[in-house]
Length: 216
Image: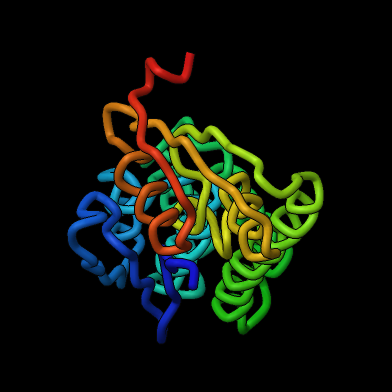
């Protein structure tokens, strides 16, 4: 079972605080776009695909707070604030631009807030479907007994669904093939040691933690 880094529940976003993993599973409730901003900025959630989806929901939460007549003039404040949470995250900008495009196309619609929310939900579903396709396709490329080397975290904690590169490894194992993994610490936040290690253990994949410099 893949770990869900975020979950949309009744107009609020539940975020797994990844800073505390693997020792503690603690969830943060985001009810406003500023809550989402802080979740991204403070590294409670991380990984490009998850950041993008999280920002989409944050955009909706910001729009929800506005009166209908304010949306056209003030949505940019919400977008810019969320963008500033992690300026280097490509998916953050990509997701917010998609949200902005939908907003502009439906600005005069009476149910604009519902349209914005549905777009955020759609982005999440798309990301999950992409990860499943990547994992299924990638699994076919590897033989029984393959050894993998990973850096950072590209599993379900960074994406939606099984993951991208780590998702391929999971699906290779799930197909019945033998695999083993060497995974780096990934300093300074130790996403490899803490997060990839956690996912590998949960998946039952034989693995060895190595220092970053041992990767060569």
